[in-house]
Image (cartoon, rainbow, N blue to C red; front, side, top):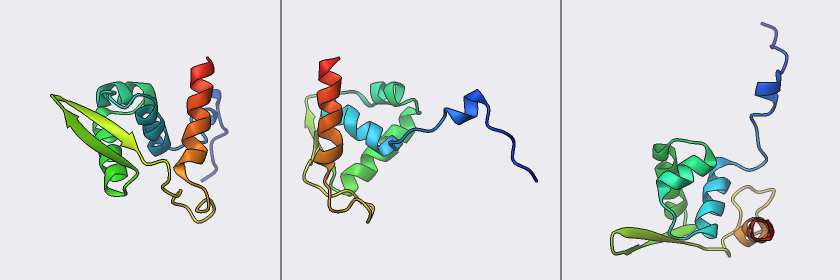
Length: 105
């Protein structure tokens, strides 16, 4: 079956960063962010953000501390990137430039 030509809508649906990276940046930018807010910022469902956060916690990329009724997240910037092509780089290489750019705006 032939592929449909890319329309303006479908050709602009992809991004260079994954949802995991988007969630990680949101948490690094605002450690006490609510996951419902992250879902809105990333453009995914809150359930998806919960799954991603738990995957990042399980892999050691973020940790969570309960402060009263709220969660406060911490990103381990020294953890290496997961894919073999980028394994010699750490999270710091991705997150820090994005945080600096966000602060300039």
